[in-house]
Image (cartoon, rainbow, N blue to C red; front, side, top):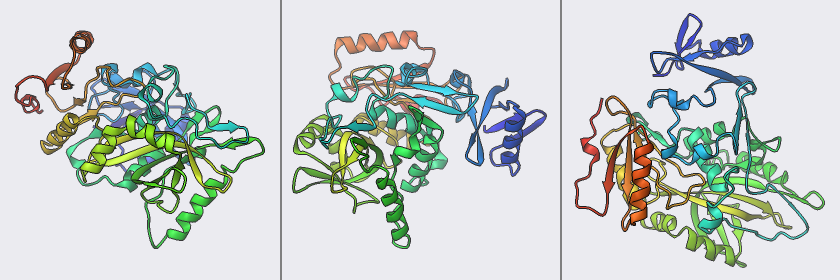
Length: 401
């Protein structure tokens, strides 16, 4: 995997001349081919500052081999499909992706009121199907960064530095209303005592861009790892790892709503030391310059930074990683928790990829009917782990290549 054909030349990403080949192909408008399957698949090259990146052509993701970085999982494994060409519009000529959000990055008026806190599922995921919710934006960047993928050689190689690096790369060339996403995006740098002053200075410069401009209040987007939520003099404050000296504040009403809406995520985080809790929020500055939450969501990830939604999914990920399997974790985007999607896609099974479905405890008859409908319409092999039945864990039976 990972080989590309440039005319008569075949190179992998690790070859010393790969970057030069990208630049030459970009300037000559040559389309390289991904050789993940015997019949090469056309790719395109986008310019990223002074560098170049190779990307899959729109609507070709499912033509790639499941183990290829350019493979896009089918719609039954992800909520992304419903947003493509609506909330997510990619121009392969320019390499620019235009995003439509269902939240604002600007507030008008003199009040610094905290508006939503995207706390209830109805507000967090019952979104305009043509727009990305704040949670969907996190899922989108996480998937574009390939952080929902796992291979055994990734073991022990993921930390906040790696997560931040690939999220920032995923955000490049993404625009909202002609504004670069990176202009609004704050992802805390890994803390370093040696470089503390420089890190704080760069963060201060970023926050300065959010200062009110007359009646206009720009908002930032922050993605970080939660350290804790603590009481504040008025309301509560979110303490983010790697920037604990810059808490993000929210009122008592938002605190109560997020505690109710994200009770599972908080339970995983506080009860399991190996679980990380990620947050994404929009925020604005108070008159004193303190960040204030406007819209917020949370996502639990395991020790390998893979997202999960339930104890059963956490167990599934642990078993797959221990068994040294290759797989992709499905993400919901705008889908609700009652919508049926596969929990993971095994990419190392013989002949074809295998989707894994978990039937949750207490599943209703309508859930089984929807599951059957999804399976009938899918071309994927599948295996089902029904928590409501006495059956052995099914994954070991899936044959490796």
